[in-house]
Image (cartoon, rainbow, N blue to C red):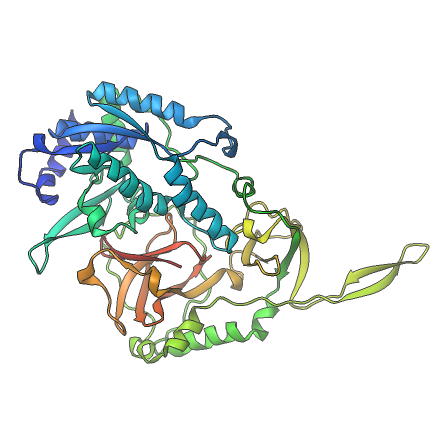
Length: 487
């Protein structure tokens, strides 16, 4: 019981945080029970705290042929979830949301890949399914709140009009914070959400599950696409996207010295840098398994002069945010080969690059990808640095320090900008300092945000690896998630 007593001490003020004053037994909570240990412990804690709890299991996917395992994993998950509900002593319901999931998440995924972008289905699943379609059904069952097993925290404060304003905070576990996946929630959605394990670490959750003898105590964490499972992505995408063979082009370092966009980026960043500061234009490589939370460290000053950033025009910022274009052409020549001097054709040597392989469709690849290229003969790893769907070309570079992997500025279009709190929304022309991440496992990065009529620009203190269109940039002030937007 020690683990539970420690948890109870951490969450003594949970009731106040969600802005409720009535008895908890009158508060009806629907827990999204997935069969995993996190949602199981969330249900357990809600029950122990005295809420009127019921569980609901979502089926969001039917196609077992798409998964690597080739079986119906959701059936096992449902069986475990039902056993957990029985063990805790709460009602259990089943709901099929597969039609909504296919329309609002999977079809979106296919469309994004078809246009050369790389979506994040987990972010969409939370925004469109768990805290929308699922929440709507839960409320029909009488739920006041929907709870999940996310590692994040929620608080509220009183706004200028006296109404509550909800804050989304990092989870207590520095290696499991999942606030990134909730970055697109609205105030309305957050007001009806509970995150019972947000103040716990993963080891504490496992310990509580074992102490309570929950059937999910030793169940491994799910992997792969939200509610679909672990899939071979190209095989999954080929259900709707056609395979068309094309060339893989390796880009040499010499290309960048002659490229106008790369020269503009480097010259502009050197101009923006403070006196005596050399801007970091190549992202340092580090495995993305480090601490995810802000961890109380101060943000620090920007290496760039904010006054100079403010003086950039909208057009300057737009160009600074654009990736390097690749236009390397290859001429052919004939030569004679072998004893019979047969005439053959080959590509002429090109100082900017070389055709090093073929692929099955540019839409199946993403920036920063290393696996699945099947290109040998290099000392260092080969990475995708760009894709061109119009010409069905993939461009790759050798090594973590390849110039094509790094960028310092990105843009979020005006219709994609989301501030979780309207009272903190940036005005046009405003500049702020935040910590930002561009994918889930990335440690937070210092950055300067600039809002203009044509979008929100994020200028990182250090260049970032693999900035990928379609992914979400999420910005934080301390441990609070402030806003997000699709790149």
